[in-house]
Image (cartoon, rainbow, N blue to C red; front, top):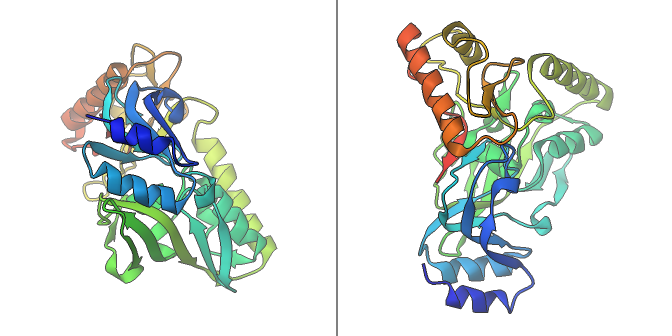
Length: 302
């Protein structure tokens, strides 16, 4: 892929563009090779101009917090875009409505709602991602999902055109939405219900305690590896894995967490191949025992 014009463009903007950039430190697994281009736009103007210049000459991947992705160790032949701090703003639209930039951390959105006595956002305190990622996959936990609070999405397409999509035109399903992959989310508007700060705080603390008991923390993991197969069984996917896969199963430094069987862990220096071997092995074992084909919740980027 030719990049001469992009290199020239990079010299005339405030935003940062890097070439042959290491993506390993950009994701929670701490796995991956390099991307041909890494772009961190600090303004909407720079983002629009870049997209019009790039013209999809290679692949495009939009990176959020890096919490649910697994990068290949091979070169990513395209651009990885990670929005800068100007897309991290959050404010009230009214007494029960909030607008948040797409890179606002879900926990921060939950805290903002609590501070303003708006309920409905408590579940976000336990989701390790950003608003943009949550919209893309309809993130959720403890009985709530993004679809329950979203009003509209503001986005830019890969031609550089800005659009607004009302929630009624978005089809949400379990851990997915029909939002086009050719859209980069800029911000989203949300609605909740007026409540009192103490009740909201109590609910958040309850969720956090449940999470601390059931899920690992402070380790190199991508979060939930597989979706719960809700159309085939009432059992959670971690239960299926625990009953199908021998304890201490590992491939290289890729392990299954002893704390939660649906969390896969990079103990030290696991490679992409190690993690994929573990993923495929678990899928095979669950299929053999329960005749259920597991579907990935994490995204494979290669």
